[in-house]
Structure formats: C-alpha cells, structure tokens
Amino acid sequence: MVASAEVEQGGKLDSLKFLIAIALLIGGIVQFYYFEEESQLYRVLALLVFVAAALGVVYTTQRGHSLWLFARDARTEVRKVIWPTRQETMQTTLMVVVMVIIVGIMLWLIDMVLRWAVLFLTGQGG
Image (tube, rainbow, N blue to C red; front, side, top):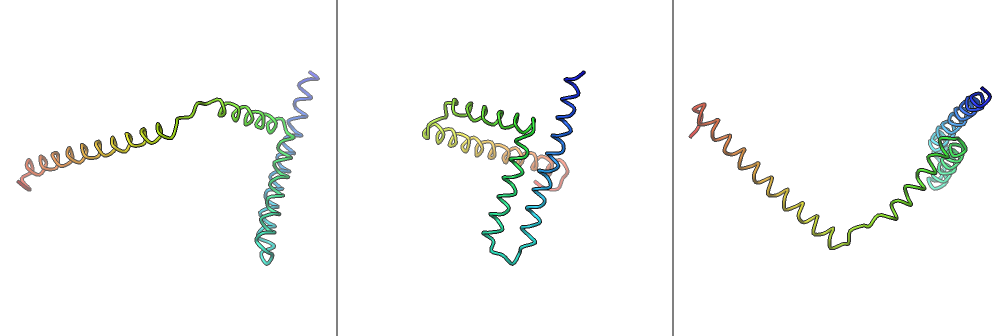
C-alpha cells in the first residue's frame, strides 16, 4: 500500500514537471516573438536556453530518465551495426534505380496494351 502511494505521488510530481516543461517551451516561443526587435541571434539563444531547461525538467521525471536510457542504449546498438561500404551502397542504389526503370517501362507497356484493348473493344479507335 505504501509503495503504490509513493508511485502515485511520483506520478503527480512527474505530471507537474511535464506541465512546467510545457510552460517553459511556450514561454520560449512567446519570448521569441515578443522580443521581435532584438537580434535574431539573441532570440534563438534564449529559445535554446528555454528548450534546454525544459529538457532538463523532463529528464528529472521517471519517463524522461527512461527515455534518456533508451536513447543511450539505442546509440550503443547503432555503433554495433556493420554498415555497408560505399561501394555496396552505390551498387545497391544502382540496382534499385534499374529495377524502378524496368518496372516503370513494364507498367507503361501494360497500360498501352490495355488502353488499346479498351479503345478497340469500345469502337473508339483502331
């Protein structure tokens, strides 16, 4: 019973933190347009500060921390992937382009034959 109360309290606190993060994002967007007469560089830097603060608040939540761990693990997995060489990539791309051209020509020929057949059967051509 106590554990579920702690989880519920954490859930309420996390919800409050998400609302704070959303408020920070909205505040960043508002300041970007409110200070229109200022240099765009300063406005963008301030917006980035607001976004960083919002991300920091989200990171302190349970879901935000889980998302960070997931992203870190995903990055580790991407590093383990054996990526194709440039030559393999170019050959595969060339094969795809050739197949697209071949299928396009086949569909064009089928369309031409079907059009001719419809025109012939309806007496409009041929």
